[in-house]
Image 1 (tube, rainbow, N blue to C red):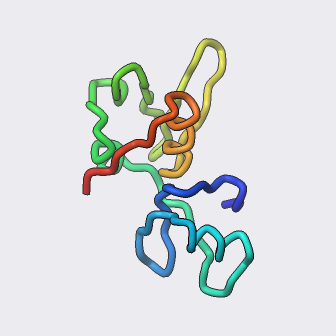
Image 2 (image 1 turned 135 degrees about the vertical axis):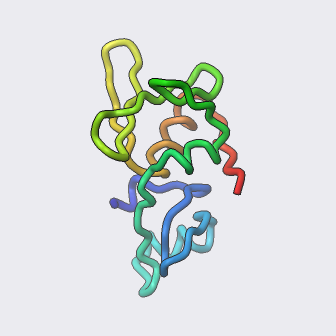
Length: 109
């Protein structure tokens, strides 16, 4: 995972825990402080549902945002017009949703 993919508010795994990237952690990551090496969280059905998506036979839906289930395990697709984006990690989903709607996804633990 590249640090340029991250933003404050992203969920990542660090030291075997899921954390929310805040200002302090983000600063430590971009400056390469030891012990601050975030790892991506693979996107799963369970996590998608915790973000409030509804599951249908072929996709997950949150309002007008749709993620299509891929035939490959733990891969999801977002398609807009003729563009298709593979979404494999939680921070990718968070960033894509924020870029499109200018709103954070809410994670319901």
